[in-house]
Image (cartoon, rainbow, N blue to C red; front, side):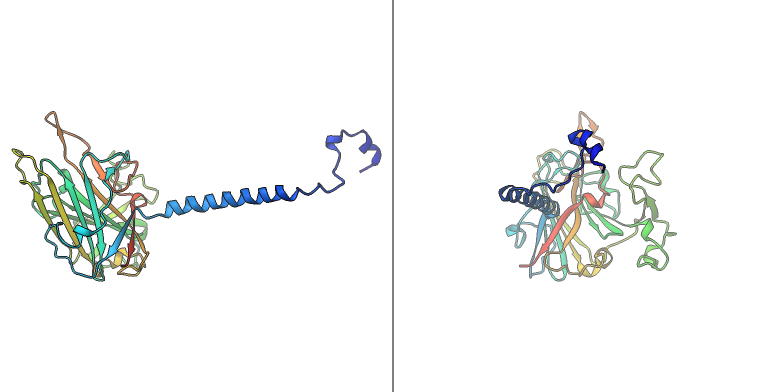
Amino acid sequence: MNRAWQQVMPVALQPVTKKPAALPRQYSRLVFAAGDVFSRYIIFQRAIMQQPDYTAYKVNSTINIDGNLNKYPWKHAKWSKRFCDMVTGTPGMYNTQACVLWSEEHLYIAFYAEEPFVEAYQKERDSIVFLESDLEVFIDGGDCYYELEVNAANTVYEVFFIWKDAYTKGSRFDIPQFDVHHPQAYTFGGDYDRVGATFWKGTHPRGIRWAFTHFDMPGLQTAVQVDGTLNDNSDIDQGWSLEIAIPWSSLGLLAGGSTIPPRNGDVWSIFLGRFQKLVSGGKEVSPHPAMALSSHGIYDTHLPDKWSRIEFVGE
């Protein structure tokens, strides 16, 4: 730059001709320390996000599925916290807890549901049990997921869902078991998408799913015990319990490439929840109160990214 112009230019706009002085060593240390604290904070926040919601421990014995939870290993196992309201995250209206265990052969799940008036009138397999009160398990498989619902009469309702974008010719789902022309195969938009404009296509970013309502999980075992009297509201019941056993050999499609049985430290996305039929002032409350191990922030169970992270740990 011409020196004459530099002489009349305001000092603030004059070019820097000297290197700025280095920060004193103590300030440099503070800058690096602050950066280190921030990095540690980010790592800590990420770690919190990756923490499991529940830890499932391994057992070496076979559990007899009869609905009785007052036995080994349930009696000495680690049970979940009380379920929360699925939308708000506040404590659920009735105490509901779950326990997940596993062996080399089976995935085991147990529930205890407090309920003063235990009712279950749906008795035929694959009846719409969620029209009453039920306990529910969803297992995420990435491109697919499995839904299991059971009521206090031990009536089972099952559906296998496949995301439509994953159902392609030659894929692992292109098998006779998942024939989209089956009379009990439907498209499904989502639990929350009930209005006419979105019912058939849904609002989920991934689109819709194929729902195979005729699916039966091979080797599934369920059993219920009622602490009270079923369908008799003349007395006060304590609640009911549910035991579930699923062979790992039947969960291959849901493993998503993971090893089955899981390895120590593997994490699966699983929904554990409850829907409760409630009558107030002679009218049925709608929608039914929904409780879950983890809050969703929305009244929709069909959101795998909202489900609980279950970590499998060996002995």
